[in-house]
Length: 74
View (tube, rainbow, N blue to C red):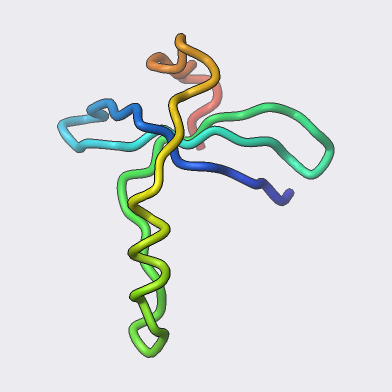
């Protein structure tokens, strides 16, 4: 499976750890949201552009994205 996600302005706390909510979809068009607690690039790569883009956030399209069903947790 491949997904495409975009960062939102919304954050939540999961098990005491802050997580930013990202929204997106699968290649087949199924809408989804992810709770990202960490993200990194390889240490040999130029991180300046990545870090600049990481600061860009959009308001969430779905206002009810705080909760996540336990059946969906990997």
